[in-house]
Image 1: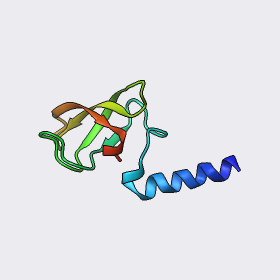
Image 2 (image 1 turned 90 degrees about the horizontal axis):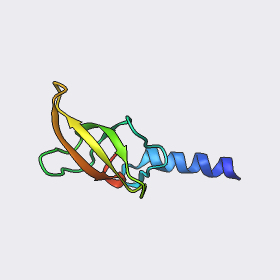
Image 3 (image 1 turned 30 degrees about the vertical axis):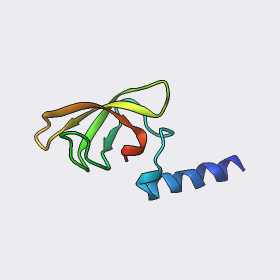
Amino acid sequence: MYFYCFIHKNERIFNNKNHLTSFFMKEYDIVRLNKQIQDVLEDSIGTILLVYEDNKSCEVEFVNDAGETINILTVKFNDLY
């Protein structure tokens, strides 16, 4: 039963970016933003620097194509994929 739920949850997480949770996200993971926040555009690439204890948000450094930092933001896991 547990194994089935784990697989089922995996499929849901990776097939629909709106249902992502922190279950698989940890520090130093590379992520993408699924909506624009401040000066960081949708689909921008970032690295998780810190996961907050609430397991609902994290600190992410977003970079441009040249690898230069655009911004460091606190982002909810639901806004990432």
